[in-house]
Length: 199
Image (cartoon, rainbow, N blue to C red):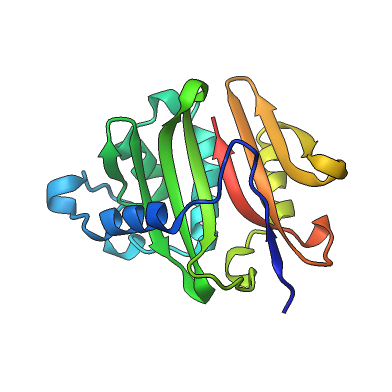
């Protein structure tokens, strides 16, 4: 099985198991009655989604959210169809395990002087490097084509030795970075989505 290369930007570090566990635990204790306003899309059947549903929800969130700064937990939950948990004043999100040794988290949080940002991240649950198949629909190409259809202008970013690190997408008021997960020996055409950052 090809090994996966996980690429993270210099200002971003791989989510620690403790951080993912905290969000997973917070999500697990969430009850609609006491901690979240239930919306029509935020019901028991939608409380556990696939990677594909999470990525399509993220595209819808990007399409319908003109300002990350003004995003509320309720609006985020309505768009994603998830019971978003508020962890602090400026930090809210959701996390859950997926099949095949993966988990995902989606968070809105303050990032230093950069301001608020939404992160969708797919992370291996353990030390193994699982096959990316469970998180690869839509793949990197299809996901980023949807952003271009929304009117975003695309630019690739490269790190040391010209290594491709991510593609950036810009339109007035929004900046999106999509980070690939590429199997060893594969090219960009076979990339999956590892992480999406929106600000």
